[in-house]
Length: 426
Image (cartoon, rainbow, N blue to C red):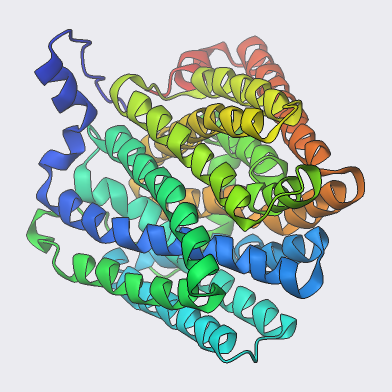
């Protein structure tokens, strides 16, 4: 799909409009307002859950296991979630699934507040949340294009990433204060309440202004057809392989950072919150830059993955907590640039009838791979220290960039007619 990029401009007013172009869409404004509260709650729960597991077990490996259980359903069932997303009304599906996610947070909150929570409760609820996410994520990702259209898609994805990372900056800081004053259970309860906002925003969308993709007919072999489509389309296969590698071992911050805070720098939950918040603050800057000047395509992904590896290396070598916090700002900026570039590239290149399945594979690569990478990163951090967990992520970025470069070179040699399509997906 060819999308005309906005022309660069020096006018501040025009620059502002270019940066926030998707907000001119009424439905997107309603959607993003509901997401803002929900995402803050989600980050609060993430911080509280990791700290709760660490209190109950004292083990970084246990944190990795919880994250793995939450992502195993995505790894196993995520592609089928994409099939469902291509068949049904995505907005209605999201309303149901977001409501169930609120129930999961409520149950965890009640168990924690009453002092009855045990590790098997956390394991079970992690699996339940993962089952929900493997159907909700592909619907939500592919719904974005139906809401804003192809021209504003990259801008909308980047702004969504900004929002996620504003929440990453705000949520952990708030979580640290709430944990210190009201306890872990209150974080879960507030997250349950926050899902009301996103459900209401979805119900208030003007459906007449949506541009839904034609629903796929129920046929046998739809999952295999989606996978075969990606395999024969290098402009989709390369970003997915890169995301599978990086998503598996680099984006394991909720596993690695608690160990960095407690064991490397001998600090508490507040320092863990500051590390995560610093990463979120950097991601806000990176997301705004992507919304204004970002590009799509595999060449941009190779460059961004390499930069990701560089800043992860800087973080792994940080000599003090203050330096580490500064390094996490850089990590946040580059990480959101990489995620937004991958997401936009895949959505713009995917055929509308296949978009749900393609984005389901993206979710598997990004989140489902954590089922493998979470325990690995947890074990590496627990055994060799938090710096080793960060270094593992850095090496993975360099490997992903090298693999993509080799694949693109081979395609250039064997199928030169596809070079322009693959390298410049925009």
